[in-house]
Length: 203
Figure 1 (cartoon, one colour):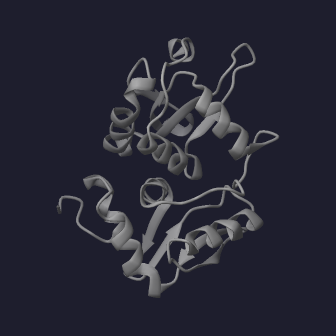
Figure 2: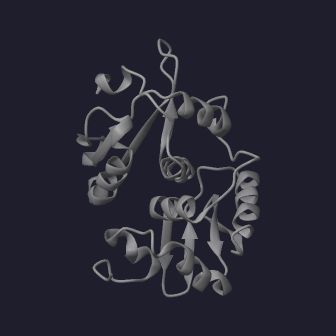
């Protein structure tokens, strides 16, 4: 694992890679800077059930990684599947944008695009029945989630906060479900299409 933190990569991230990383940061991805290192690195960590998804992310980011994804046994017998990128100065810039005092925030200058939304939805999207589509955004405060709802409006998507026990999450209005599908379906990998209500093997 430590080898992933060693050498800085050379060259800039592509716009596609930046979008995938930002979508991951809105979801389950984390940026960290080790005390002895200059720049941040990205951790992608999902359940082994999402192996195809992690492999896809690694494939898209492999030029800034040293080693591929690996299984890791966690608490309660959970098997995680994860990888780390190298350090990268552009990741440090994103770390400054997305974190305050070690906690994730929503950057004021965040601009969503279809790829960012699609990755975010693959990370945090959920469906209940045929008409309820959510983003499990509970990691953010209520105020931060209200910012995200405003950001979604730039893609002509309408959403509201939905109370989930002691937390809130984002629920898309039924009038925006078709729009959500139009934006994201071309980018969702096969194993994640069920989140839009489609059969995972459909193309």
